[in-house]
Length: 146
Image: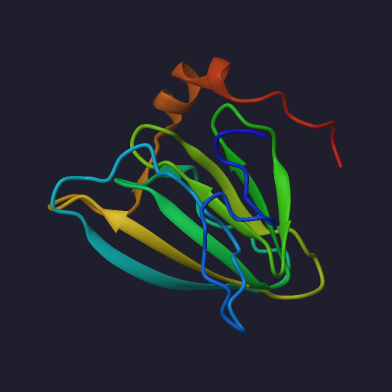
């Protein structure tokens, strides 16, 4: 399992048995920004929406797909599809988030993301073409054309 892969299954920590409570993900983030604030965002992409341009977050982000499927790609990891009912996370900081678009051409996708944001920094910063070119060697190999 990669460092950013969802944990769907048995919890890594003891969680009391409570009817109606299901552990979806149990993640140990690599860092929490000093004085971080929390932000929860609802993302609603129409069919085929490409998502946000390559970007990074100032702190860790944790997501849950409510409906549809998200095409998800972080720097150094292969592209994958996260379906409704599944979770994803990213460490934030310097890691580039390449894709978060709707993987479905004919249906909407909705997901919720909770982020820990560093004070005085935006929760999302776009990465310019020059930096993408400089870091191209860190991106996982791309799948064959679809």
